[in-house]
Amino acid sequence: MTFGLLAALPIISLIGWLSMFGLKHRSLFAGDIAGLVYHLALIPLVDHLPGGPEVKFAGYLWLFMDALVDMVSINHIGEKTVWALRMGVHLFAAIWICGVSWGLGGVALWIGIPLGLFLAVHATFLADVKNSRAILGIGVVPAMSAWLLALSYHFLMGANLAP
Image 1 (tube, rainbow, N blue to C red):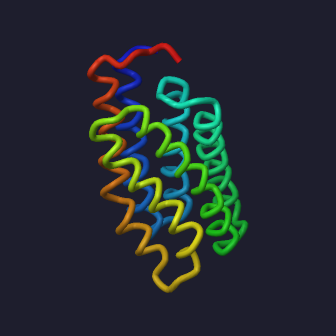
Image 2 (image 1 turned 180 degrees about the horizontal axis):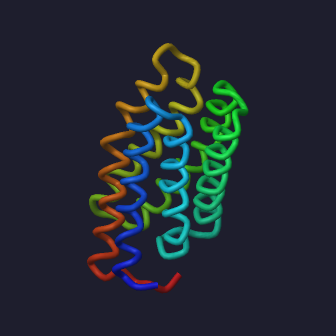
């Protein structure tokens, strides 16, 4: 895979992710399709980013499981079930984001560690509080956007392609 494609995937993911938030208010189906783009665009990056097997496993688990959550939402499993499943897979997102960020260092470290910790804390302690979705959005939208841009920058600067 080329540096250019690897650098484009976090941007494609970011576009899918931001679109997901914008679209879900108008059309749950369209929002879930955007969510699929967000998650699936990151899958090829897992192998090319730092982290041992447990970090990579958490990355793959998060991305595939959250894509599954998007699919069950498309197929009307129910909002409460979708939310509970999504909170469950956020633990794996937190592990992957923290592990990758630790390995990348620099700005990715300073964005990714707090982002991962916030995801884990939110999923564990705040998933059922009033305005939980708003809390998640406020805590994650700027940090995840910046982290995905940091991943793109990592590949643009000629990161090592070897897994």
